Length: 287
Image (cartoon, rainbow, N blue to C red; front, side, top):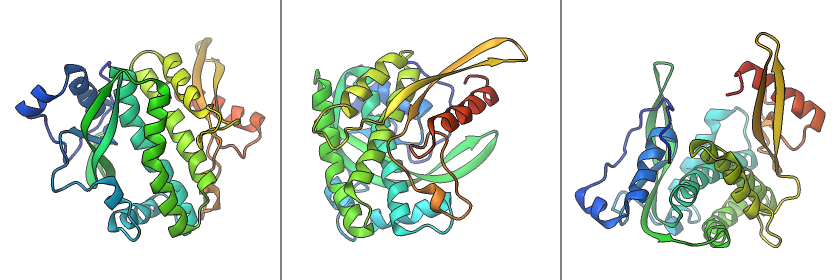
């Protein structure tokens, strides 16, 4: 994977030990380093789960303090949240980080991975020279399997999320269908970003679509797609172009105090959505 220039400084990163270097193939270690440099919002390390990590079943158990901490953390993104809105934000937040890490191993090294341990940890990023404190999920991987096809990736991803979605439904009342749609959105968005990082957007998008268009999967969606947005920069006459992931689910942000629709929200009319994305493209110069 190609190293990026994302501005970030992370806390709690565990640097590879000599034993880790010997135990895992070089391409796996390269993925870990690229994730830390380019996508530091998700923590990742290799090796058996240590005492500061919890297995996923315990982490997402009924009444788990880890789950409650994740729900409470969503209040930083909006005010006047209900439990259902917190759950919508949490499953999107968690699925995005899970997709980013698993997708990086799969697209960057041809490896599928199973989560050996989890923790919800403090981390700090640097934005425009200012330190910004936040939290992230840290994924610990022990076993990496080479050569599985996209169907194998989808099965493992779905198996990991199924109990998470079930417990959030019981805890907050947010339906399983709504959560799976948000998870599919997160995966498609993460794969697009990973595709950009490896210099092959088309491959990232194709892999995501192979998952979310699989009939019978809870991740299946007719609405989720990618769309190329283009615009002409009047200052330079340069044609700007960028692919965007169009959502099939809704995070319910518009129901919070002062909230609004996201630019790629499934509830927006296609024309209004494209107009917003053209404005975004122009503002960011195609980046």
